[in-house]
Image (cartoon, rainbow, N blue to C red; front, side, top):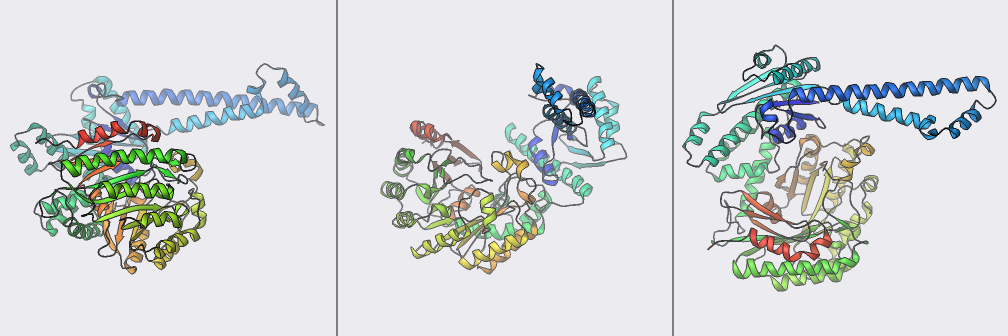
Length: 633
């Protein structure tokens, strides 16, 4: 266990993400001084954490010793019976004795062995809480310092000293001072920027002052932790201290504030310690994004110059042929929920009516892009798909629409009838998402189709006249080697889509891959600079260049997801939502609407996740959006 002792709260999330970027799977426990710990829900002091660990360890060791003794007794009894009755091996006598005993199930050899295994597992999990490393953090208004101690014996010694200090409760305990002057571990310190301090003091609003100071403290703290762990472990992270999902948004904002590309790049490197390679990719993407954003009505830092404000529309279709191993999105099996689909489309139509009334008729907004995702939208029967698309076209003004995307997604959901329904409307872009072209991996991750079906679906879409196709791949799928990834890229290159999105596998909290990790831990799951560079090289050969980028928590190899496209085929919706440049009105169950505020921040509201509840409460979902997007005169 890595114990992190803080003298203030509010930085736990950033510390957790950064440490786990260096040490995937590491367990962290946060500790506080006594006065602070008792004012935080679940807050613990070092003394409380150490006492709890010692008690649980003693209990686990006692139980293990007890069951080891019981198993040894049973084995001794069995040996005596075998010696007395060598023909039956003592089995008849043992069985008779057990059947006549009130607790014969509990005392059978199998039951005893199970008890012993449980006791061993309990001790193993308890020992995970033993102090292996300690991160000591001291945050002040003018400076921050940390001590990183990776030596297990020194970490235990530090925990004992912290526990004694907690028990004494002195405001300036000499034991704490001594921890900063120890010879082992790494002590790093940085003074906060005087420019930021002066700027914050000049702000009239206390809340704004606190936000600015907190941001500076967070950046300094993360830099210090990065330097300590980088030196200790002998490795750098490609994205430096950045753990957020939108690195390009940071760069975009810096350029919009008037900085030159050179100034913005230098600032990114100094503030977040981003590698030169990732910084170059970010800059290339931002140049392209700014060009795309100038063609739509963002109302933000970029955008069309006609003075009108736009929006993008998202519709969620939560049905799927099956749930993939890595997926955490809300989805429902299409066969089981087929009878509910007409009612679901009716609920979407109610929400579309709201959009027409509020955004089109009242606010006079321009609809720039539509994205229908899921789930798998092509899980809807062709007639329902046609009905939904007809509703959109008949009730909303699509005359200035720049892009209309449907995720056809799963090849096993793509039929000629469904493609005809899509083609009969104004849809400009579809996704056909293989994830991999290796049949063994497709079976493992729960996709009930083959690589041949992917090729067939792609050819069918081309024959229907679709000239803007995106394909998604995932790097780091269980058991896939570099050779597997390259074979997949070769097959995609042979098909030649206009868009290619490369994802690094992310272990999402509610995905089966995470919930049943023990079943898949034996598989190699790796995304690296080398594999991402390999994908980028194939994209380049295909005439595609990067146009948007985002990251996720627990992403393999501390990497990213990158969208590549031919010139003029960039996914407009992807840029608008990732760079938070435009309001997103989201319809359907679990759909998350987002409003861009005047200060660049966002506000949002989410529809309920349960599909039956969404249908029953669709009017309430509409009212949520009405409140979110309310504009005072």
